[in-house]
Image 1: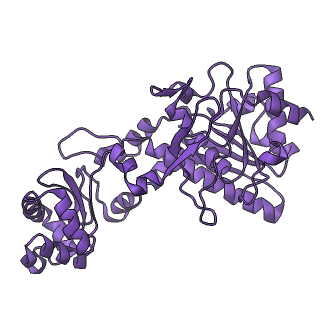
Image 2 (image 1 turned 60 degrees about the horizontal axis):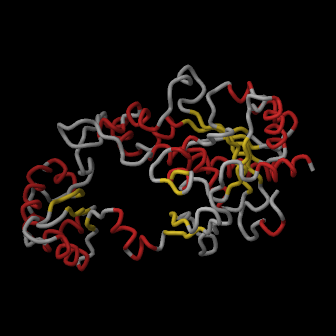
Length: 386
């Protein structure tokens, strides 16, 4: 473990050690969240190159890409060559001295390294072992598991984008993020189970399964209603009006999610009669007559600037928002409040997005900046040998 004065107090996972053999996004996100909550996360990386995302830039800060820095605070980095006896031996000692092992190697590689669950749990029955895979552990395991591949295979891209346009991916690797959140949840559940039984367990999350679970209502619309979703641009398949509209100067999102909100919207845009129009009287009616209603609302909203509509709609308690650019987001009070400044003696102060979890009303502290490659190798080896 780190020196006593570096051990967090008052955090839920204080005293838990995580041996992190994952890289890129889903695994590192899960382990970063565990580190935020107090765990001692030891990130195992390849010598020389380290985690792939260290090179996924520009932009770079020092030698590391912003991509890497966004996913690896509150961790220590050790470099181990798992292709050598010494590297495998040190990795095994680390795993056996840990409460949790996280890995996202191709199926079979951890067995080859002697770091598989069966081998480790035979010596360490209390170990919680988490595997993140692309397609589970069946016949599909050899297929590549990049986020964009699974956005295509999960169907998400088939109904993302505009009607008549090409299938469109989400602007961030959101499926990796979702998979990492599921993994973090599974690990903590397994730790709770260990408290009750004294035994660890193996949990696994596949990127594909997590992605299908993330389709929620769209999956249910098909499974229960036989509806194959098609691209709707920024419209909602089950609620109208609930989408983007162009105003006189910039795009605006309007979310009239029920009849009461629709009635208020009609008053604000100067068309109160629409609420009693039999074509639009209920949400089901509005969904069936989507095109007619959207044409009317679009014409009215195009008459005035977005800021005027936001003021009027918010005064009527109708959910709405301008579509902001990222610089506008972080210039806003709520956006600025998400930024955490992390003191890094090598890279200077790093402004990164904080953990959204609050523990007793407080943001979990950034105890350590994202590590430089192999920064803690000697320290961790000394702890294991000691």
